Length: 573
Image (cartoon, rainbow, N blue to C red):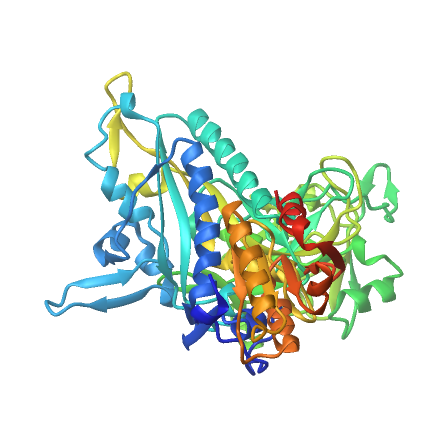
């Protein structure tokens, strides 16, 4: 391809709403064009990158034995009503009616469609397992689309759905998909981490995310430097925190006392007053839980120096979301903000206690009476308590696998795999006959890769102040042959010769043969667009010398023109 023949409009102007490097450089480099809120057109350069990433994903999926198919982008809403997600997906599900008043949605994912595809077509365990995948457009009506391709409303995604007769076979396929995903990200030249994750709206009993490490990532990842442990903050766990006991025991019995703590509503105030560490107190976090048809006040109890992780808390009580409760709402159910504890709560109050507090002795907590707290408590005396992992893991907490000090890093979610179980097959009555002739719901897995998001993720991890730095597998062209002055016939002819020779070796190459642009402008485009290498044909051509420029390091190397193709081939291949 030649610059003079290709539509690739670069610009120096940065869009006012573009805060991430990928958003800025993909627009400035002529890869994408915004057509609406969260909507982007892929221009020729961007389409080449998108297709290269898509090809890697497809090849690795095909290597696993998965079958490629294609679901309709438009799905009958009846499928979503059947699964129950037409309610739980909320406003992110874009719904519309056709001229006959039939209801449809633009699919953000396709569990329902694939269950409908398999239902009544696979009827025996003998035809299992099967894994069906497609790479298709998706639409999620984001309330605040931002960050370019990172959080757009329309996006290209690979999603796969597997069907199994046993849980053991689901786990086998889950592991196969994990290894295939690792191969995808490795081939794309990305630094990534596989982390435990929350299943979210998709559901299921187990899931893992594939995080491309980048400072601009929206997700906080908890990782251990001493082993392979990694988890999204929403699903991260830690070894139980060891806290020294401060209470005094008399004949082996804890003495629970109510003490006056007038006006002291915070953990810090009470701890300072009683001269006790925050870790030896119980923090009450009061929230309003929103369900499909009602809401109610709930209380979560965690250690005083811990923070509540709201996704974990939401999962603990299986609600749609948690929102802050007003003082009036808290008082209306008989709770006393600032003095709430797990003892003597009103009977109708739902409460959950963090796992690490089970059977703890001697902690300070609210007495559920204004201006009073309890000391010397014994949580083993509580009855009918629901314990759940509620805390947000903090940096410095200990790894459950090896005891190392956990730390935070940032990542971009580029893939997610789920063990769905029978959530969708049961809801949609999709069954097969097992080896005993008994009808069973399909056991399912779900596996997604954000193909268009990966275009941005590559640049978030690989860029500098000048522009993009594409990895070899994702670059629109591997070599940019820059003719310094294309009006000089000898330079143009030499450039064309190098260009043709590189193409003959199977190296994707573009020739910058523009006659109206100055050399500085051409180099600026090379740096902005981010081709891995440039060959500069310029003044030293008369000495038989051309220059190779490495985009990543910007190092320049003078090479004999007769050896330039050989040199580049060795660098690339």
